[in-house]
Amino acid sequence: MMERKSVLNGGSQNSHAKDRAVDLDSSIDQCIQTRIFKIIVIGDSNVGNSCINFCFCGGGREDNTIICYMTNFPLDTLEIEIDDLKIVQVWDTAGQERFRKSMVEHYYRNVHAVVFVYDVTKMASFDNLKMWIQECNGHSVSPLVPKVLVGNKCDLIDHIQVPSNMALKFADAHNMLLFETSAKDPKESQNVESIFMCLACKLKAQKSLQYRDVEKQEGKVKLSQGPSTKNSCPC
Ligand SMILES: Nc1nc2c(ncn2[C@@H]2O[C@H](COP(=O)(O)OP(=O)(O)OP(=O)(O)O)[C@@H](O)[C@H]2O)c(=O)[nH]1
Image 1 (cartoon, rainbow, N blue to C red):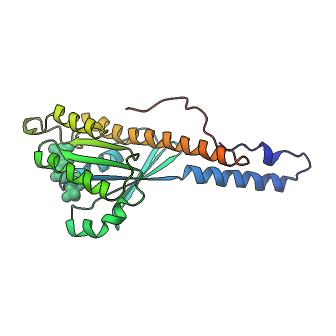
Image 2: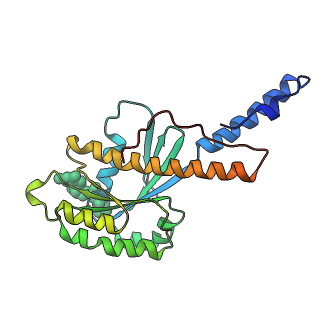
Image 3: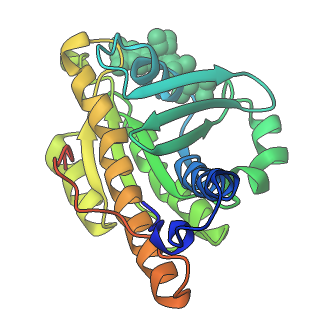
């Protein structure tokens, strides 16, 4: 919260001045609250990117701390609000290669977090992760940008080709957390949620750091976040 004392002190100020000060405060607060993060979901066509997004968005959430809605053009976009964060998640549409290539620059620009997805029943989709990581790095996505690895379709237990320990090794080597999920099995939907909650946590932590930087640089406008009272980070 922004410190308000310096603006509101001075008993002779009339109520209009106070109202203006409060307006200023709330517009700054609003500015903070609508900070937008862009998360991209990358992986071979058919691994389940869209289903994962839909599962998270439409998965029958009982609380109302997360609000999400989708648009379809030019890319599918999912907006998620978590506490005071607004997260924008964008993913490839229908695996259309021609479309993807023409949008690729736009896709990677100003990204805040990356989710790499493979299909646990298709070794090729796991092998191709190297190519996706290369493409991501080739578009100057900073190593500091949080990245997670998701093995989807783990409900198809009789068809699993990518063993967990192999995926874990890969995730470790690339400094990522691994989530094994199913966008189809409701019992696994918690894991889908954990992916985005984990990223939200990381992004929130980064945001706190940025606030402290502002605090240091600008003595007058003091932006700081109080310590979190509950830790809902699943990672
Ligand atoms: N069994 C199972 N099927 C899944 C799962 N997730 C997705 N699918 C199915 O896999 C197929 C592809 O899912 P999509 O979400 O469209 O995959 P995508 O990665 O978005 O594919 P593109 O749109 O081509 O990029 C669909 O038939 C889904 O129903 C899962 O967790 N388990």
